[in-house]
Image 1 (cartoon, rainbow, N blue to C red):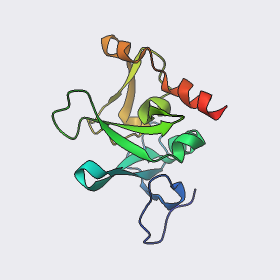
Image 2 (image 1 turned 60 degrees about the vertical axis):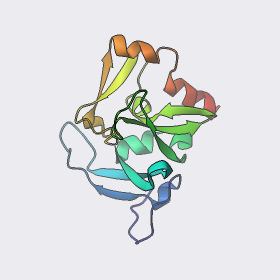
Image 3 (image 1 turned 180 degrees about the vertical axis):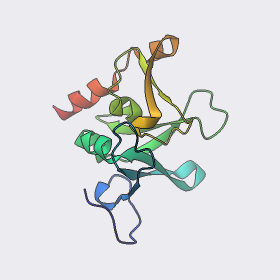
Length: 149
């Protein structure tokens, strides 16, 4: 995927139209470029952008990279910052941060800076514990692998 140098508006689900930017999280082996993935949020009449490191974005399965990503409000969310970035793959919503971090059943992904749209690996950490039990029935990476078959 090449950087979008024209003034064309990025289109969700069309990676060739996505914009790129320099990564300000360059420590710990992070790639020097991020991809700004557009996410339509029609309920609030806006377009949001998820930040994903170039290497992490390129390593995502094609069906995830080429899907339109969506923001989903978490359970009893009290504001619009309590969201999860997901994509529809093979009829199931998969959580992008779990796929990027290769999360196993029983693990959950924590955003260090609190911004759930910041999906750079330098901002994500895998955790285990009580909260991870919710994810033991759904393993997003397995869903994506099954979809590729």
